[in-house]
Image 1: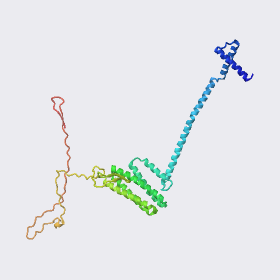
Image 2 (image 1 turned 45 degrees about the vertical axis):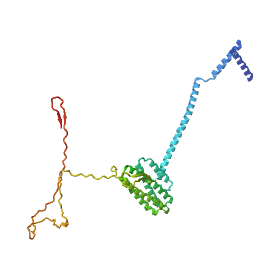
Image 3 (image 1 turned 180 degrees about the vertical axis):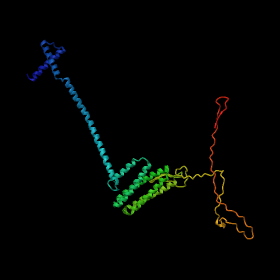
Length: 361
């Protein structure tokens, strides 16, 4: 029997079984037994094809393991990416540290000079005290002067001089501006004196380099020295106004606070004000002693030597009496005595009536 015939027969049996279930057709014994056998065979077929408990557990474990692997894969990839990023950062820092170390001796115009300046900027960013930051600016400016001297020895091009002098003036203005602001607020003649001396030294160093620098850069040298002369004048003017009530005009320029002009009304509360020394007068009970003159003015014509014998009487008169010259007088000032006042008397009323009061003192 071919497949279509078998399918038609099975379909017809299924239809009859459905009619039997619905009650639309009453089965006979042979047909009912056949249908029951068919249902039982289908049930056995379904039960025989189902996996047992051990197989189902194995399948379940395998599915769970694959799901866990699929979830762990992104985590492993995330850890790998993090490790690669950390390694890259460490490599960049290591290369940056080596590059910064190599740029320590770089001169203006060198390829590593920009990295050197970036390192100086980072150092300033990590300095939070204003006075220390001002000192760092002045230190960097002094380094530029030393670099210009080295450029002169190497016969560097003019552009390198321009770069070094421009950076020198930038650090100079920043350092002087911050330092004068601190001095204006907190006082400090010593700080201004140090700044004035430092500016004079840098001006002298630049003056020694002008004759050896390229002719095109000499104007920039002169400009830098003029700026240093202005710094010296600024420190002098501010120093003279630190004892006044009005120190600055309230405005600023490239060198910081501008000193005030005009009359100076002294402020005794200023930390830079010099107060007169305190002199103590002797006590009123001390006797006043008139000092004995030890010499006679030459114009009097009197011999100051002590006489050794009686004077010869002048002609026509009586001889004057012999007067002994007194010796030197030593004045001894009385030693002041410090008297401690007696303690006050403390009277306590009697604790028991009829007894005298208690007096302490």
